[in-house]
Image 1 (cartoon, protein in one colour):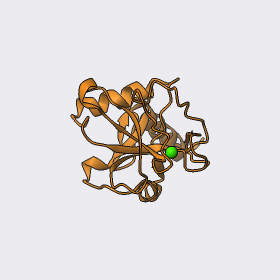
Image 2 (cartoon, helix red, strand yellow):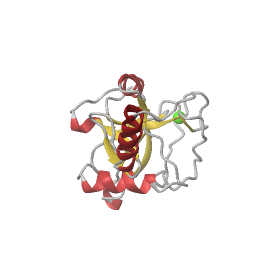
Image 3 (tube, helix red, strand yellow):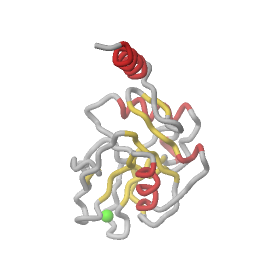
Image 4 (spheres, helix red, strand yellow):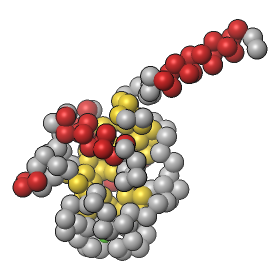
Length: 163
Ligand SMILES: [Ca+2]
């Protein structure tokens, strides 16, 4: 093994150990996210995805089986962003009432990620965002909303969209 390759492997290992993320992204748990609230950008759900794609990312996917959800939500609360509505990568555009993450996993409508009473099953409400409701502040949950609404969004580096 030559020295250049050894150095490259060492730096790669260090970067991974430090959870380093691309410019603009922050490490939360062991994932990298970009919060558009940091750059003041709001857009529709589709345009938010386009923006994320420019950074080799896609809208955030949350997973109940994984601690990263907890890290992400705690991070948002600690930042004081609980009153900001932020698009994440789930929708029921393909089929009303069949919520899917953009990585192809189903999002169970009974998931604890949803605010009680959400999603509303509206055919005009097909995209999911994180947000809060007055009386459970500062807890945040998923809500469905109109995809054309201009909201902040969370890009997730390395999220591999299949839909
Ligand atoms: Ca819907």
